[in-house]
Image (cartoon, rainbow, N blue to C red):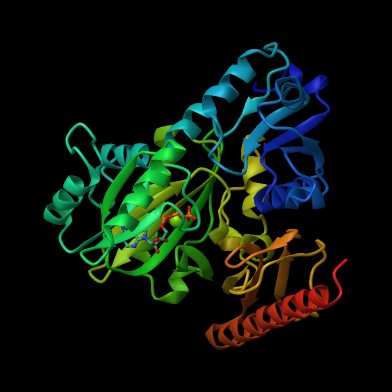
Length: 423
Ligand SMILES: Nc1ncnc2c1ncn2[C@@H]1O[C@H](COP(=O)(O)OP(=O)(O)OP(=O)(O)O)[C@@H](O)[C@H]1O
Ligand SMILES: [Mg+2]
């Protein structure tokens, strides 16, 4: 049994690599599960520092410290797929087998899914539809200008360029059309290449709706499906989520197709932990996978307050082979939503980690990550809400938006005070 030899000697059950808000929320879930969790990250101002986790300040470059962190944990997981998988494998192999933690999802799976080109290959192997694509093959195209000409022939008036990895929140995604300045096109390519990513182009999908499905799976093939949700992104960043999608005009057929797709992907990879898949649906009700995320996901944050088990808890419980059989049936309320608290435009300052004072309202839950730096479009927190019916949902959505405005007002007020009386 995984982890059996080490169970007697380990001081910590779970270890997370990375200290952002996802690690913070995993740490709270571990506390609810009555289990210990350590986070390896690089700064005391990261969100994970304001959580019940044991903080271990180190990166993979600090070999001894990082190996120490690995050795004390029974299970290791990630808040972000952009880890150096080769280095992690080396470090794991240099640890005595009886002290080596069990890693989930496995490094091999992470290595594949961190790369969107690999994702495309998996999807085409599994015959799951996703946008047509082609990558920038420098052996075929002498320069980016010649590739651009080719793209116009393949995709027509517009397409979407992407970095194969290191993209997030719309960074790493570039909308190309005939009016795009050549210099912008080239800088996007160079920036991605400098980071070590491949560049590929994808057909522009004229979607009616974006959807997201999350599912936790254990190696023993226990599966827990979270409800399918609709999501709305602005400038590549998730702004809001509504669900279950069936209550927002998404057919049972589409819900079934999304569940089949994620299930097929997870089984194919023998995936362990929480997996999320983003989809597009067009006006002809055709479904396309946008991308696969091998981790807990922004679009499933609602689960903290709306489901009996949150996505964070489900991720950890998947490693323990301790997932309950179904979750749609255990929704606390039939309608729910989530709004991201993104840093307002024109506001940039450093503040304490304390939550702005906004009061409380029934069935509205404010989550604040405690980031030290407020910056435009930065994810600072989120607001979950739920309701009994559609009309009540719209009222809750309005109240949640008012809370968001209060938070913004409070941040502007604080920034102004700091400007007048700097510390
Ligand atoms: N092929 C496409 N056609 C139309 N819109 C697209 C396409 N690809 C991406 N988009 C839009 O850009 C957004 C961001 O793209 P994508 O999800 O690929 O990037 P990301 O930065 O990796 O996102 P995340 O933060 O979710 O990891 C999508 O949610 C969608 O709104
Ligand atoms: Mg995305």
